Image (cartoon, rainbow, N blue to C red):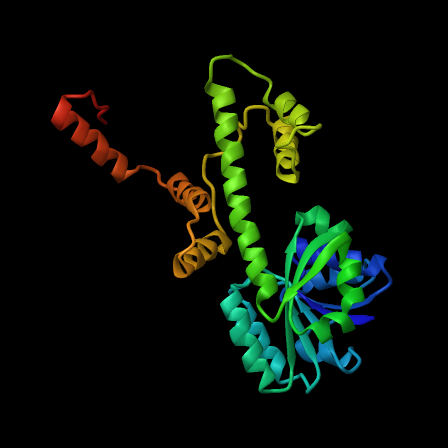
Length: 298
């Protein structure tokens, strides 16, 4: 099929190449034209405006968005003037599911369909087959199932439910990811600073990835990182978050569901960004005052 694709960052670029390999025709647009020119050299059809993008698509037009969640509303607003009843927008990025529900209602008023697709698997998955969590009308899913199948690894796509369900499932997926990553981080810190000096962390990650019950894709990525930098000396202990962990914790609070591990992992990321922790200063001061415990002064 011929599909429009907006957003040619690392994930989007690889997904377009994946679609081209599977004989889809991709009309590609990116805000910065250099990325559009680059993907055109690899087989995509270039579009340098939303108007050109829509003109090059057959009706009903299908447009896949792979942009930041902060940019989705602006992209939709700019697209609307060039779309017709029956067209479809698929948001493949990490959007908050309540925003997805809101956008679907807005577009429905103009006769335009909306689907959401949580996308996991990193750059490797984007290029060779991702894990896709799809939300939207079942009839639309069935109509465009081949598109999702071609973008996914074998058995790696699933219709989760109505609009927003794909992003909801992906949000919780990322909350689980936060907790799992934090557990690995704590374990490897104890390996590094525990009883035995100079343990081969890369070797431990490698053997855990062969038959251990804690083997995983994330541990494979840690193994790769430790192979390049055995003690991670080149990295700062600063961890960012891109929104999904916060949404997961916020949703758990709203729904009254205990989410201890994901919450702890999120707050630990906040802690990593503090150059100096006032709360830890407070603890040190109290211990010094009530028990005369030693403190370290500047």
